[in-house]
Image 1 (cartoon, rainbow, N blue to C red):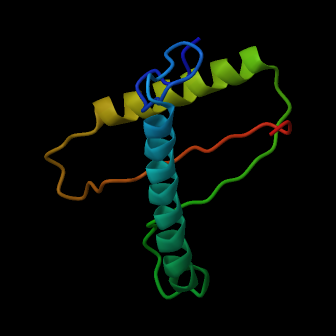
Image 2 (image 1 turned 120 degrees about the vertical axis):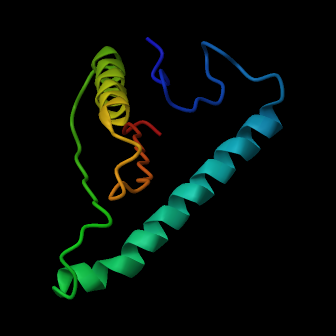
Length: 111
């Protein structure tokens, strides 16, 4: 199964990149973008946890679960399906809509 269905994918066994250094550079840039998101979330967090704002601007959820690689693939496809359905259902004319950067980072215990 292609874990990247609908999401950005840089290389891998199914579609290796011809220029490994370029592929690594692209992933490094994506990681930096993810780290910037985490910095923004951390900067906003005191306002929320102290009760100075009730408006939600971020969420942080963390879980560790035991899965086979096939089960993990299915979870990634299902997550993408949920995100795609939400995106498709959203009314772009709604003035209360905001862009939400959602980065899902997963790694198993062997790396």
